[in-house]
Amino acid sequence: MGYALFTCVSQPPTSGKSWLSLFAVSGLIQRFRRNYRTAPAFSLLTTLKILESLAGVPPEDWNALAGHHPLLRHEFLHALHETGCASEKSGWTPQYLTLWDGKAIRAAMPLYVKMHSYGEYVFDWAWADAYNRHGLDYYPKLLSALPFTPCTTSRLLSKPEDQEARALLLDAALKLGEEAEVSSLHVLFPLDAEAELMTARGMMLRKTVQFHWTNQGYADFDAFLATMSHDKRKKIKQERRKLREAGVTFQHLRGAQITPELWRFWYKCYSHTYREHHSTPYLNLKFFERIGATMPENLMLALGQVNGENICASLCLHDGKTLYGRYWGAIDYLSGLHFETCYYQPLEFCIAEGIQLFEGGAQGEHKLARGFLPVETLSTHWLKQPQFANAIEDYLKRETSGVARYVNELNEHSPFKQVEEK
Image (cartoon, rainbow, N blue to C red; front, side):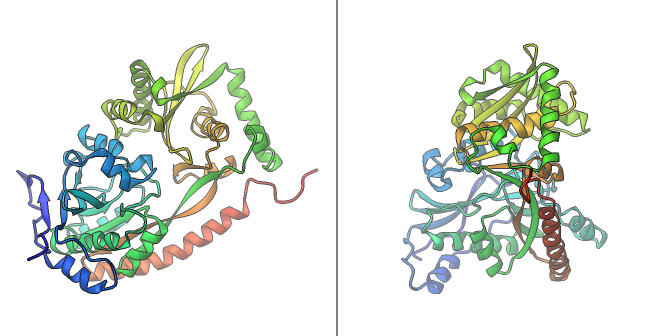
C-alpha cells in the first residue's frame, strides 16, 4: 500500500497491565484523503507515529510547530520527561501522536496515558469515583495537556495553514481511545478553534474559569492602580507599604542571571511551600536547572529579600507577549508576601517589558481584587462508555450554565472604576 501503518517508536511496558495495545490504522490516512478531496494530497510517505520521548525529534523542528509558546517548546516538555517529573513512574506516560512526511515532522499532539488525575487543573475526580462505584476502571485514561500547567495553548501543533494535519491528529487520538485499553480522552486548555474542531468530532465541551490580567499600556504600577476603585487601590497600597516597612525588596532576574546557588534557593522555597500545604512537589530541582540552561530567555525569577537575605521567589515563563505565572515559594511567612511575590512583582515586570497578558494560573477569586478578570477556559472530553458519556454530557450542560452565571457575578464586582471617582 502507499501509506504507512500507525507505528509506535518505543518499548512497550515491561510489567503490569498492558493498557496500550499497538494497533494498525492504516486506513486512516486513506479515509482522510477521501473525506478531504479538495485538500492537497498527503505524501505517500506520510506516517503517524506514537512517541514516548522527544529525544529523536530535533528541537528546532519541534519548536517550528510550537511557535512562540515557551510551554510548548521542546526544551520545556523534554525536561519534564527526562527529569522524571512527567514520566511513567509519576503516572504521566508520554504517548505523543506525531505526523511525519518522510523524516520531517509535520504535526504533533502532546498526549499522555494517565494513571491518576493529579496536576491537571480540570477536575474529574467525581467522574473517576462514579466509575469506581460501578465497578469500572476510569484509569488509565488519555490526556492531551501540558503537565502541571493550566495554560491555554495549542494542543494540535502544526503550521497555521495545515488544518488537514490537525484534523488527522485528532481523528487518530479518538481512534486510539477507541482501540486502546483506556476509558476516555481528555484535551485540556486547547485553543478555541481546536475546541471547535473537537466538538465537531463529538467530544464534549467543558468550561472553567481562570483570572487573567491585561496590560492597557500602563506607564507604571501607579498608573495601573489609578484605574482601580478606591477601596481596592487602598488595600493594595497598604499591603505593599507593610512589606516595604518590613524591609522587603525585590529583584527581577532573567534566566541567565539565575546562578546554581539561586536555583537551589529557589527549589528550597518551592518545596517548602508545598510541604507547608501538606503536599508533594510535582517538579524537581533537576527540571528547573535544566530549563534554566536550555531556555533562559523565557524565564524571570522575582527574588525577595529582607536586609539582603533571600526569603522568597516566584518563577514565571514568558514569550514577550504573555507572562505565565507558574510557581512560587517562601522560607518564612510575612503578611502579604504571597500577593507581592506572585502578582504585584510579575505585574511590574509586565508593565516594564510591555507584556500584554499575565495568566496567573488556575482558580483564585482573590485575584479579582488585584486586577485580574475572569476568563472562560475550555476542555473537551470523550468517554468510551456510552451511559457514562450521556450522564456527563447532561452534567456539563448544567455546569456550563453555572459557569456563565459565575462569570457574570464576578464581572459585577470588577475591581476597576465603574463611575468617575471624585
